[in-house]
Amino acid sequence: MGNYLPSTPQEREAMLKAIGLQEINDLYHDVPESVLLKKPLNIPKGLSEMEVREKMRGLAAENRKFDTILRGAGAYDHYIPAIVTSVTSKEEFSTTYTPYQAEISQGILQSIFEFQTMICELTGMDVSNASMYDGASSAAEAVMMCLDRRRGTVLVSGSVHPETIETVKTYCWGRNVEVFVVPVKDGRTDEAALSSMLNEKTACLLTQQPNFFGQLEDAAHLNELVHMAGAKAVMAVYPTSLGLLETPAEQGADIVTGEGQPLGMALNYGGPYLGFLACRKELTRLLPGRIVGQTKDAQGRRAFVLTLQAREQHIRREKASSNVCSNQALCAMTAGVYMAALGPDGLRQTAELCYHKAHYFARELQKIPGFVPVFDGEFFNEFMTGCPIEPTLLEERLAERGVLSGLPTPQGMLWCVTEKLSKDTLDDVVKIIREVCAQ
Image (cartoon, rainbow, N blue to C red; front, side, top):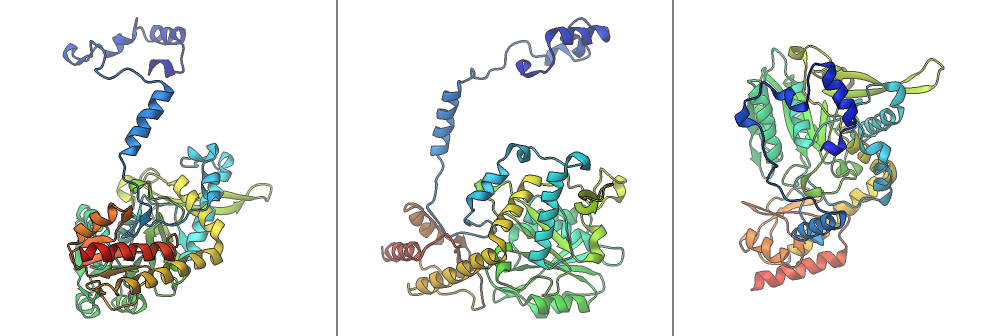
């Protein structure tokens, strides 16, 4: 890396002389000889640009790329308009960090402010932060917001994504907080079990809408039960579904969280993704991360500033509510550009296409013996069916034909359909499945 050091040999010599040293090795005078590197590292020689390109192309060829994706379970294959990448790939955005100096960061601050505003419009909440690492850590941070001296136990519906449940448990373990999982009945949160588990120590209930099994919860009633017990209602939501479903605010949620990947981010083999977190006004000061606000400068012009920063770098560590150390600015901007590009009508159209195509595929699948619905409730664009053959075998057979199947589960298959899949594609998949099952 010596060639990339900004100082010249003469400048380095002058700096060494200023501190009374003769050469660079004198800086390591106190390091034992036995651990000093006396010979070059055993690594291959450097490659030319063309050789690196060929090497990377060869590695990429080892990946299995699917033309048809029928899997969701937390990460979704949505169409991303070209304008999203065109805007977010601009050089001035790709290296964004925390905009501490408002006077030279107005562009980034405005992009975060617009993201927050659109998340609030999407969820019906009053305030949004900017932002979280992913949906699971966002849900865990939301749960942390609900804890106080009197209420120190957490309820999580068993219909929440398993990885989110594990993340919440990990966060709570570090705070010595008890977590209880509410049983599932017929693919949805068991309301009777929930009622029996709520008590004066319950801080909150975390639910997911639509839930992990694709089912639509009776969120309004669940949240009402939670409020009657004096606890807070936390909802993890699939943002695309909000183009069609009631907002979490209309369903009585106090805090809303979710995975922002469907908002313009490709699957990317798992990341980077984006968690969003929003709440009612009275909980504003409990939000982790940062909140960008709009104000006026000395000349009365519209301006943006970091309004609140509830993190350990800005207040006494023992008083901090979170140690989130990234504002995910580029991912937040991506989500903002995506939502702006679609607009309310575009988001609703996307949601409607997901809904209708998923229901069409479900009906066609049910014509094949053994692919019966596991649950009878309403769903958005994910649903679970039985599988007449070993689910992992069906997964592999479909993979051989360029199709990523639904997610194999103990109950069968969890399928997902987005707006990207045409009727002809879905019909072809049904035909392939019929052939595989007949073998």
